[in-house]
Amino acid sequence: MSIAATLNPAALVRSRFRAWLEARLQRRDTHVLTQGNIYILPTKAGLLFGLTLVVLLVASVNYQLNLGYVLTFLLAGSGVVSMHITHGTLRGLTLHLKPVASVFAHEPAVLDVVMTNPGKPRYGIGLRIAGAPVETLAWTNVPEVGQATAQVSFVPTARGVHEVPRIAAETRFPLGLFRAWTVWRPAAHVLVYPRLERDAPRPPAPRPVPGGPARSRSLEGGEMEGVRAYRRGDALKRIAWKKAAQALESGGDLVTRDTSTSSHHELWLDWQACGSLAPEDRLSRLAAWTVAAHRSTTDFGLRLPAFDIAPSSGDAHQRSCLEALALWKV
Image (cartoon, rainbow, N blue to C red; front, side, top):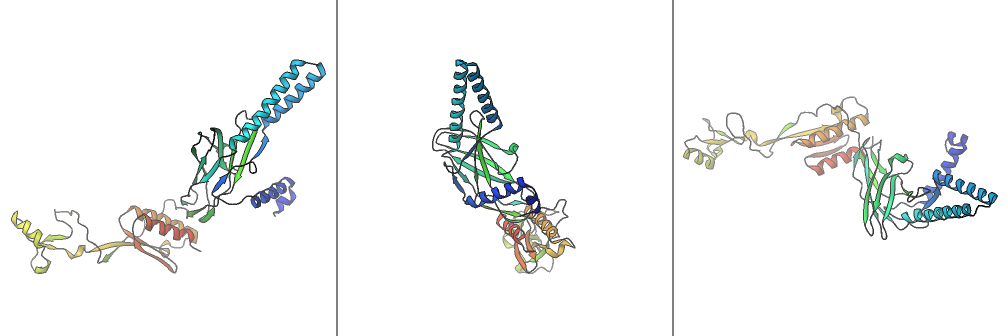
């Protein structure tokens, strides 16, 4: 417990309540709202409404106003019905968290929450990260015997595997006199990649590697990569006979295979290539290089101290490299 919490009674109470709540809530990705996990209290408008009822009742008793009694008890009954409806708006709903996609540090992690309603329509339900400002509430309605999806987000500031924070669902429907809410601790985790370095330098130049697949593309002068015009001294076995036959029929010349094209380029994203940067800054640069290399067609590999990922390409390879950077122990 911190010194500030010890010196501040309010902070101490909040800390104790938060610890009690964390111990009471079990982590699960599906949360069924029942009588036992929904809390309800009057709002500021509800407290003012109750004070108004007290004033009306005192005035009615003091002046023996029969119409005052009627108005007082009519409003009181409306308040009681409102409390019942507010609580019932949440009761019976089922909240389910979809799998959370990996994100980069300092970028929003979006949580998709599916609300399933087994009964009548539910209106005015808001979701937010527990403890976040009220302005971040994502409001939605759930149709009768249907589903609705709401999105909430949080911004992780460090790489690695993080627990999904607590999510609060609440409603003030229909009159705003009462606030019913529940707190949910999902069991899911989110993988956070290193922060992408802003204005990162270009990755190192790829190096040619012999034995790779040749790619056919147009070169300057009208030649095709993979074959070229016959030159004196070229071995007969290097002549592309099928292409040569086609060329001779059209009045062209012999062509031979260009063995210089039987290589491809590989790019190594090396820890040592980041210079004298701090470890976390190196990981940020390597993450930026990984994203940049993925956008190109060049195979790339990742080289960390005592750990290598062989050059390859594609979405799966990019994820493997970013996961290695996210979980790297400095």
